[in-house]
Length: 364
Image 1: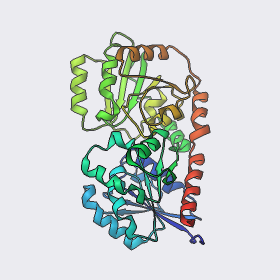
Image 2: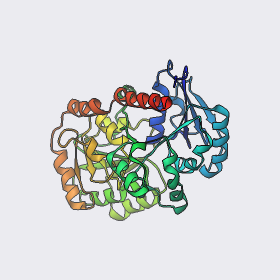
Image 3: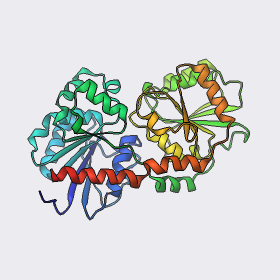
Image 4: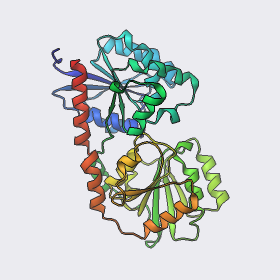
């Protein structure tokens, strides 16, 4: 089969808020070579902090709908109208609904990119039902071995349908942000050790466990800075108050979270499960040593023990607190940390893998 003059790709997401799935789609759309690819992004709602970072030559289609299930018919109509060579759906719930309708578009190849370990993340029975049709996808992209095994074991996805491609890190974009970064800790003593955690304020990110960990560090010269927003905000605020955590600070959503990483002494990932955590990659790209909870989602594929981080179970709060103390009193080579991430997950390495898969799928 001859390749089309350009491979048209339609990326589908709910929005372009500053999350992991959105960052990957933005990176792909911005950096796929225009001599080969013609990218578009279809959003249920044209919102989000990454909108201004999308290249001007990428068409953004706004479906103007708030709910995913209400967006299904507009999505199908849009695919029918555009007739892309590839539909790339980058969000679990959209992936699930779309799987039922793939056979109605015989000339288009459909790729789903999963964002989490599905059996841990998708709990609603009405969504799980659609995973019966997941083998309709031509390819399913997982970021970690944990995600791949979960789909095969718990959802009976054929092994040949699954490709593992890790998430990319855009070092150039991060370096630009770091150059603009002013120290956000000006109100804190220089001698105080700063620990940073970043993520949506939801149960999945495990910030409740992290607050319990810091209840063992109240008398230490250490502060915790949590970047992010979400539905559990008030619960976590109350928990901070109940535990008397005067050195824990919530900074909300930040357009440039890298400034916190740049001036921090340690990054902590407290998640209960992940897909392949971008923030752990980005902490490494900023040269920050990481202490990560031993949870499913590719942690062991990112952390090179003692080089860019360590892994410890956060469920043992006191032991994890002691590990934070120990780690903060060690010295770590920032360049070695950066190189650990750059050599395996740089944008160029990962983009080449995507380009190859996109070309292969169109040839079939």
